[in-house]
Image (cartoon, rainbow, N blue to C red; front, side, top):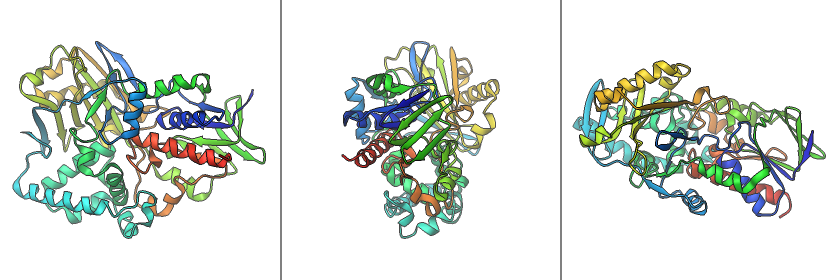
Length: 449
C-alpha cells in the first residue's frame, strides 16, 4: 500500500516528534513512522505499585530550556530529585559514607581530582560544538581513549577511580571505549563534568511527575494520526521523484526524510543509493552504551530513616549507580540503580540473576532491608530490539576526526536527527529536542521556506 506525505520522519522518540511538531507548525504534511508499538524511544514510563516510574531517561536540569518549555506547554509538573543526607561510596571493596558532591578519598587523590577537574574544565572549552574534529588538538585527543589519557595524567588511584565512576554514570560505557575528544565534546555540550554529574544545579536536578515519557506522548497526541506505530523502516530509496520509505508491505512517498535514530540503528536501514562511505562508516563506529535500569520499591524509606539520601556509587561490582526513586507524593519508597558498561552486558538476558545481584548490592550499600522489596522491575536496554542499548551512542577513538563531518550533513533528501547529533546537551532530552528542531529547519529550507 502506498501513502504520500511531504516529509517522513523515521522514529517517534523525542527528536523525531520534535521535528514533526516543528514542521506541522510550519504548515507541512508529515508522517512519523515508529518501529515500536509506543512512542518515546529511550523514555519509558509505566505504572509500578502506587507510582508511575521511569525505566528510561528520567531527569531534567535547570539549563535545559527546550525541555522545560515543553514540560510547561504540556501542563506537566516537575519535582526535585532527593539528594539530602549521607551518600555511599563503594571503593576498592570498602564502604565509605560522605556528604557533598565529591566522595571521601585520601588527600593525595582529592588534590589530584581537584586539579584534574580544573584541567578538564579548561580543555573541554577548546572543543568546538559545531565541528569537534576541527578543534586545534582534535587529532591527538581523538587518537586515544579516556582510559589512556587518565593513565598518563591522573596519577592517584583514588582520583582515577572517581573519574571512572563518573564516566560510567554519564556515558554507560567503559573509559577504555571512549575517545578522549568525545569525552571533552560531551562535557562541553553539557556545560562541564560537574554539571553532568551533579543533582542540585545539574543534569539530575528534577524529575517529571507521572514520568518522562509524557513528553513524547504529549507531542504525539497533538500530531494524532500522523504518527504510525508498528512501522519499522527497512529501506529508504531516493530517485528523481523524491524519496520512497518502506516498512513491510507499506510504502510512503515523500519529498524529504528525517532519520531520527541513533547512528547504530540508522545504519540498519537499507539505503539506495548507498550512503556515502563516511556516513556509512560512522554508523558502524558509534555503538550504543550499555545500561540496565532497576527499580525496587519498599514499604518504607528505611535509608532515609538512617539519614541516607539514597545515592550511592561504586568503582567495582555490577551495580555502579543508585538514587532515591521515591514517588513525588511520598506514597511509594523506592531505589533506582544501574548496571553500566561491561556489567550491563554481562547481566543482559539474565533477569533472575541480576535481580538477586542488584538487591544484594543495595543491601551492602544501605542495609539488609534492601533484600526484601515489595516490588521490583528492570529494563534491559541492550536486549531491547529497537534500542540496542542506552543511554546514547559512544564515539570511540578516530570517529570524530575520521567521520564526524558526516554526522549531521544531509545525504540528498535524507536528514539526520537524534540526540547524538545535538550541539548542546548531546545525549539528553534537551539534545534530542534541539536536534529535531535543527533537522526540521533544514527540511523547511530545502522545501523552499
